[in-house]
Image (tube, rainbow, N blue to C red; front, side, top):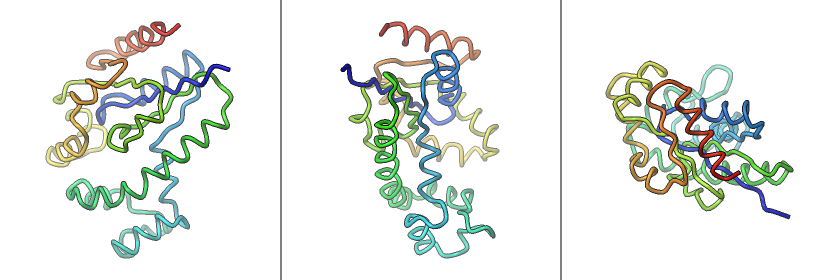
Length: 197
């Protein structure tokens, strides 16, 4: 029995990880596990992490329906590294645990984990290879401001909150540049995929 290949798809914020994941699913039929979705699950009303967040920041951190005010929480954690690390220490172990359990339940030879903070959450040991989607920082900033309607200051804070992309690239098995048309990214993915097949 050949053990599963787990591709850890990561990269800088707003570099195009979702685009890459969609392509892998569409073209190669690979199952995709999304760490961001699991991180949202970790803080749903009724979870102990949700309770811990309210205890720390007060009930004004929740919206009328009991869910977290994600924008407000983002403001706090992207401006204060201490608060961010407090929150991540709750969420990362939950996400890592769920990824492993979900993977065990999928009988496919190759699975893709989309984990924006693969390095920061120290999950590199859980995957068998690392694919980094990269783009120049100026483009990253531009995409982030457009996508999340952020100010320049907030966009820079988010980029700085992650490990520098150059360090991720240095540890990648494959670097997928996404600085032009999507087709260029897709071609890089095809190349990475076929180098193993």
